[in-house]
Length: 167
Length: 178
Image (cartoon, rainbow over all chains, first blue to last red; front, side, top):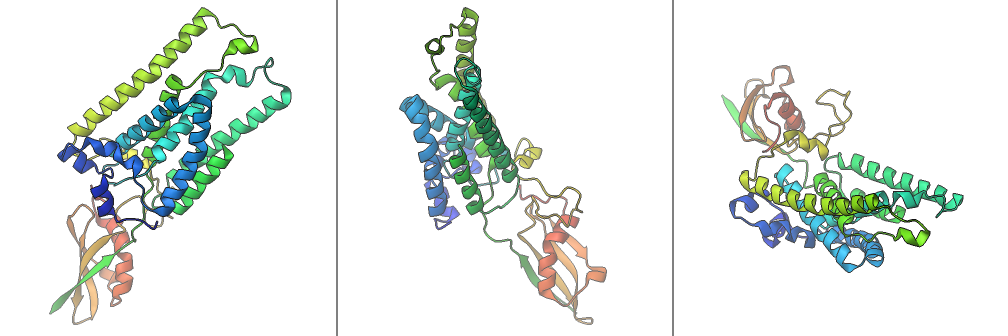
């Protein structure tokens, strides 16, 4: 990944459950979102954040995007620390997926407008259906990919990039 | 006379996928999105929301915030109450990794979700037959398991090294490091 060693990442603040518990290092739930395993990891994550984050921010404002990204990144790291304590992790992907999740919330909350006959022409409604199908296929594909072990992050980040363009 | 030879199998330094981090982030993003995202003004399109609908939307907004805050608080308590090494839900690792395909025998999966990729063993060499006929395998959790190779006895140390993950899966009680 062209980046620092695991020891360096731990020293910089990677999620490491043993240290969080033994040293009360709660701050390790916050710092991983700023750290990346290497240059490739960083570039692809920032591209994803640029596309998804800027879209959310332009529509819903800085405050909403900031709150969603930060809480999602912390929450994702927390769940990872509880359920997968054996892994050291870094990255902003929890926050990026949080922004994607907030787009889902947007769709759910405005569902009645998305398919309203009054608001949409028939062509637009069809486009909305296609976009929704693509979105759910994308999430499903991501879920399946997530169940493979030790898939190198190039594959994963490539998929993340495709997800962003699909979105 | 018998001699021991140290064997080690390494699967390399690869980064595991941490799906709970992503799916956890998505769940929190969904909850926070319900509470923070700007709603489209339906009046603009000629709709008038009923009082009941308005109350429902306010309720959804509060639920998103409350669940997010409670979930993070509860999560921190659960994390700090634990030992930082044991997961409260061993099956949850299947959210991150599932051995595939399910119909293949345990030793012939396309990929595995254990720590047997990096195991070591002391192989006992029988000087008379010039073959390794016994292994003291160090399982991922640190336990030592003695394996009599029987018909698998061989003089090829590299073949034996390559077989260590398989022996680990067949003979170790715990195939995870934690």
